[in-house]
Image 1 (cartoon, rainbow, N blue to C red):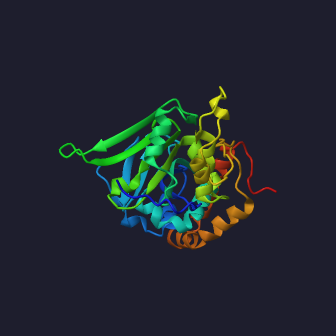
Image 2 (image 1 turned 90 degrees about the vertical axis):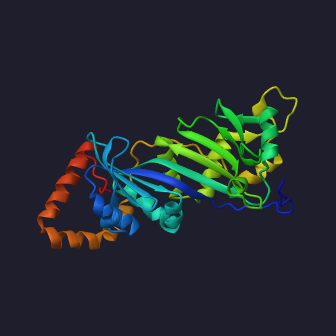
Length: 312
């Protein structure tokens, strides 16, 4: 068994995004948006041999996937950043998120992760809490797992799943050090959010630190308890180690908004960030492109019921 770091009681409040997927509207200029968001000319993306998820075309560059040419109206263009791509753009993440919302895009999935290197989370203690009925959660399913080499019996993975992978909120806690075969304490907590919950979480990321968002969601959906005589488990005291990990972050509810608007200031910032691309379009295509953009924007306003987001 690896030695754990028992002397450190603090834990970093930072977290990171390990996976995110978002959809841009049908009338978004895909090539321009990709270059604006990632600084990569769309010509560098390689077209895959087949589409996916109802999209006829798929393009790949590193850990970025672009799906386009949907089979029906309204599918838009789907962009996914996995692992290394999320890490690469971590510093400009809020700019990406704000721009997606500014052009009426939405997020379809995001994975929020928190790493514990300080020994606050112990997989053996978590396992004992699960088998001892000391978990309160907004999930029907809780599952532990252990993975071993078939020939040697050596433990290669262990963790716990809370909820169903098919639901919009799924939590996993696992021994990352064991998975990576490194000799240190490293337990990862991941929240896999889909659909409206992913979209709501990314709106919170615009104003809060990722680790705060992740802990707030965890605090509202999962807790480890100390047994007491109270017949109601939800009133049992929260375990000290879980309190330390949550770090007094308040509960956050993932509420799906009804088309909440982006501020006029944010829209202006997004517009001027695209000014160079806009000028290049006019130079290459002619001034008619201005009218085309206006027509597309007008149709988008009509779909909203005629509400002008620029109006005071």
